[in-house]
Amino acid sequence: MTSLDSIFVFITQSGPIIAACIPLVFIITGFLKKKKKIWMEGFMIATPYLLAVVISNVMKAIIERPRPFTSYPFIQKLSEGGSGSFPSGHTSDVFSIAMIVSLFFPKRQIIVPFFLWACIVGYSRMDLGVHYPTDVVAGAVIGISSSLFCNRMFRKYRNRDVNVVLKESENVSTDRK
Image (cartoon, rainbow, N blue to C red; front, side, top):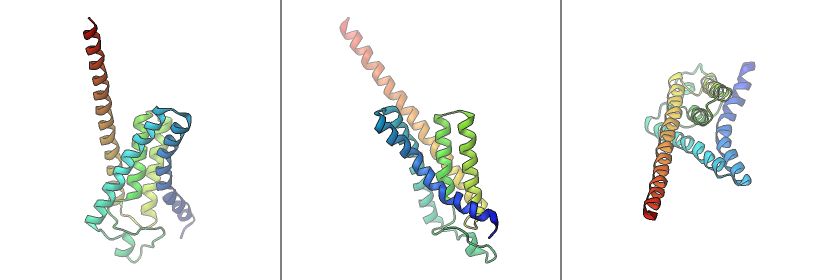
């Protein structure tokens, strides 16, 4: 174990915790402040995260790729890694959060740290001997794709909701004439 391995163990363990806490902070803050917008943002941040978790776990169960430390005896396992290797669940978690937060708050001071964090978590999974590079790349693709998909659905729903309200207001105004 090198001096950096303990740092990577911390980073890898904190990834899913931070990913799960970010939407919870929005939900709780919105609830406590009675701000529906913040509360809804929390649910909209949680949705792609949960989708990425489901996709990753289903793929792990279907593919059942062995972990690097089981395939190559010279690789030391320095972190947890129970189910199949492909794709990296930790990586899909953090990339889904990084992407959806970046879409909601498109500012460089948000985008750069979130994606840097996601990349470091992905790298830590390889450094600790529990994932291959392709596992991490697939996890990143799943996380980013789940966020892009959910964001598109949110926009579609939001636009449809606005159109329904506009049509209702048009009907009310024509009924009054």
